[in-house]
Length: 161
Image (cartoon, rainbow, N blue to C red; front, side, top):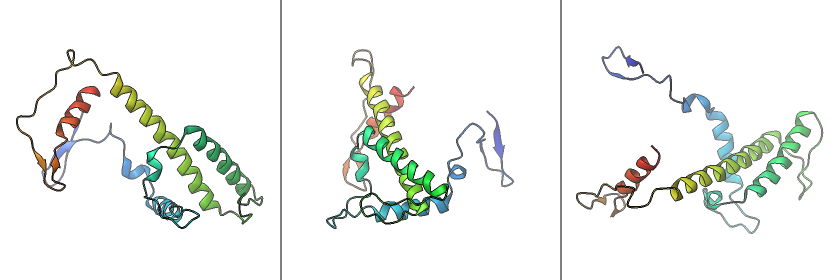
């Protein structure tokens, strides 16, 4: 690994083998997607759900059905055809449709990643085979006044080796 030295004299490991998360995402797309997600927080009865409500879990087959439907709608719009909302019969907007594709693809990926993490967690060696580092003292998270979860991070670091 190479070291990058700045004209200020500061240095750090070079980024060549690290994903450029800032460069991979367009802020204008994130903004549009955020507007889409906020608009869809409101349920038909007027209830406002939490922004991370979808992370509670939606079955993969439901994401797949919606993804295929919205991808089809995008394809229709892209080719110049009329595409309408199946419930309201209102014409669809291509940006809104693309955001729906992003949501369902992201949700599906989220469910896959959750499964992978759960499989890793359950494939951990037995307690006799796995040595935990006992904390020297119990610490408290100053912000929330809860016991520290540093032990969990230590555990996950060992599991992910």
